[in-house]
Length: 101
Ligand code: FES
Image 1 (cartoon, rainbow, N blue to C red):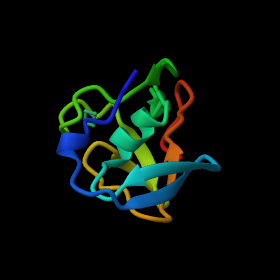
Image 2: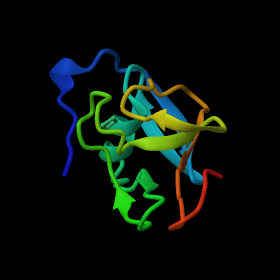
Image 3: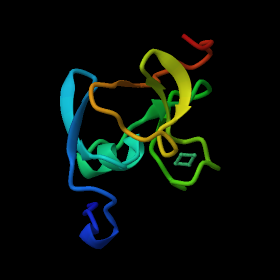
């Protein structure tokens, strides 16, 4: 379970963005990955080799487990992207043996 540490919040201003048709509430300054984890979303992508589910791990841009399609652009690191009001976020799902879609 993830909780927000209020002392560290940059802002109390609320924003919302779309994740797979679901409205996600975040605060100005949240990254996409942190907002999704707080909302209970655990899967950001699947692997092209086995199709295994992956989730944000390092939260600092080194593991690449948080790759998502954000506003139509694939391979975005959700842990490094600041959530913006109205953005559209999708899981990056790949079947075994598939190329990028
Ligand atoms: S969670 Fe590791 S690169 Fe984003």
